[in-house]
Every structure is written in structure tokens, then in C-alpha cells.
Amino acid sequence: MHDRIKIFGGLALFIALATFPVWYARATGRANVAPEPKLVNAGKECVNTRAYMREYHMTMLNEWRDEVIRDGKRVPITVAGVKYQKSLTGSCMKCHANKADFCDTCHNYLGVSPSCWDCHNYPGERKHETR
Amino acid sequence: MKRDNNNELSRRGFLKKAGLLGLSVAGAGALMEVVFGDDVLAASAAESSAAVRWAMVVDMTKCAGRDACTDCMTACHRAHNVPSIKSRRHEIKWIWKEPFVNAFPELRGGRLRADLAKTDFIVLCNHCDNPPCVRVCPTKATWRRPDGIVMMDMHRCIGCRYCMAACPYGSRSFNWMDPRKALDEKAINQDYPTRTKGVVEKCDFCAERVDHGRLPVCVEACKEKALAFGNLSDAKSNVSKLCAGRFAIRRKPELGTRPEVYYIV
Image 1 (tube, rainbow over the protein chains, first blue to last red):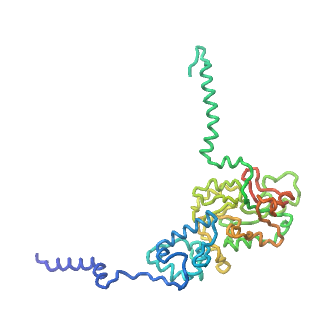
Image 2 (cartoon, rainbow over the protein chains, first blue to last red; image 1 turned 135 degrees about the horizontal axis):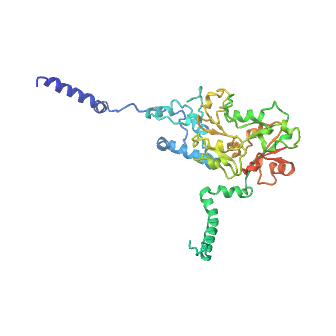
């Protein structure tokens, strides 16, 4: 065991590096940089609560889609006295007009690329996204 | 089957066979219904009796001869972000002009009015009462609404093109390339989505406008008022009156698709 120092030193270094994410998060108190989508519609009421929208906005959009296209139910929904069409471009993007700072922030963070924008337009779209 | 010495069918055997034959004939109708669903029955049914039956009447007496006019087509394609692709292999069409012999091939020959053969007809999706495209769609991306509009759900289309093969009018176009590459960025209608590569599209009678009580774009755009849109189930509607008072033809009625676009000639 002439190389005791090298072996145990190397092992210690390996363990330290391998567990880096664990002790770094412990030491600094944060695991990663959380996405911070920017709201430009401050003060205005959304069609549902923040918690619901955060978790289920895609489900809600799918439901809207099916109601509008498949069932022809285009009657607007009323939230806090304001009428909203069940429409991504027509309603959502009117308030959340900043796709890059709002939608993309989380989508990029989570590594999801929703196919909505293959067809649907968004405000200020200078060059269409093409595939 | 028991046979007597002369190898002839016995009375009992004959009755058994006759019974089986009768049963199989009676069962065939039920079997057809199971295999083909309601479509076969619908094909033999009379015209739709729904309360609302959207239809279009094209008055060719007003439209004919205006070869330079493309108002309805331009307005429709602009409103729905339909790209103009020159290549005939890739082109996308919702409403376009077709020579008489192509639109009404079964009327070719015979002694028709001479001017008809030289007329270009405005053609679009016929929104058939018995649409063959709907019958073949494996994902129900296209279906017939109760009010007669043959609708498309682009979210659901897998681009198999069965509907294109089934449509006898060539009303459907396939997006071989991303249509956004062929669209003019400045002229794009921001309120209507584009399509994506790999889906089939066609005229949907402006369902998004009709549901809000507005007329289709092409009808509004026609300065000659050659296009009329309305409810055929309502005897007092403009289209009902036009069809009742003038001679109108439909495209390929012999196929039993019962198209709901009428041409006054």
C-alpha cells in the first residue's frame, strides 16, 4: 500500500465532485436558477387562478380547442366581468403579449417545445418560426 | 345434406338450404350496418332534415366572363393565410377557378349551351351531405358538423391524405412544405393561424365567422354578389329562394355525395 495517499486522495476527490450538486445546494440554499416569467398584465385578472394556470394551462388550452373546433362552442367565457374568447391568439396573447419573456422562459427551462407556434401567431412575431 | 339414391336433394334438405339462404340475405343488411356503420344508410337517406343546413349558391350568370376578377379567391386566401405556391405539386387551394369540363366532366359532350364550355367556374369544398372524406379519415380530423359544415381539426390531422384520395372534387390540399416559408410576412392575417407542414387543409365555409353570425369572406368580397350563403333548411332564406327560382346544378351528383354548393347557369 505505497500509494495509499494517492488512492484515498483520489477517492475523496471523486466523492467530493460526484456529490457536488448535493452539498452545493445545501451550502448556498438554492438548487438552481428558477425561471421567472415576466408578467406584463399586472393587475388584470386571468381566466383562472395562478396556481391552476401554472400547472394546467396546457390542459385548459386543449379543452378550449376541443370545445371551439370540435363542438363549435364559441361562446366567450366571462371572468370578473370581462369576456374572453376561448382563443390562444385572441385572448391569451392579448394579455401575455411577451412570448419570449413569458412563455419561452419556462418552456426553455423545462426543455419543452410546444407545437402551438407552428401554426398560431403571436404578437410582435417578426419572422415566423418555420420547421 | 342427405340425398336419396338418385343423388337428388331431399325435401327436408331443400327446405334447410332454403332457410339458410333466407337467413343470410336477411343478415346481410345487419352485417353491412356493422361493417360500414351508419354511412351506408346515410347514403341512401333523403336530404338532411337538420334545422340549419349551410349551403352556397354561385350565380354563374353574374360570375361568367370576368376572367380577370379574383376577388373571392384573394380575400379568402389572405384571410386564412393560404400561401400562393406556383408549383402545381405543392399548391394550396381553398377556392379557385376550374374550367367547366373539369368541374362538370360528366356534362362534357352532348349539346350544351356553347358558352358554358368556355366558362371558368368558382370551385371550393362542396360540404357534402354525405362526405366521402369524412368516411375515410382514420383520426376523425375531418368530420361533418350537424349544420352541414365539413370541418377540419388541424391539431388532429396526421397527413395520411386518405381524404384527398376520397374527395372527388380535389378540394383538399396537402402541405408538402411549411406554408410559412411561402407566406408573405407582411400580408399575414395575425388573427388566423397558419398551417404546418404535413397536414391537409381545405375551405371550412368560414366556420369561425359563421358561428359568430357573419358571412364567409368570399361572399363578402364578391362585388357582383354572385356568391350567396345561407340556410337551405329555411325555405325563406336567400339560398332557398335562389335554388327554388333558378336552374342550378351541382358537381358530380351521380356520386351520391350530395354537394351543397349550387351553380346557377
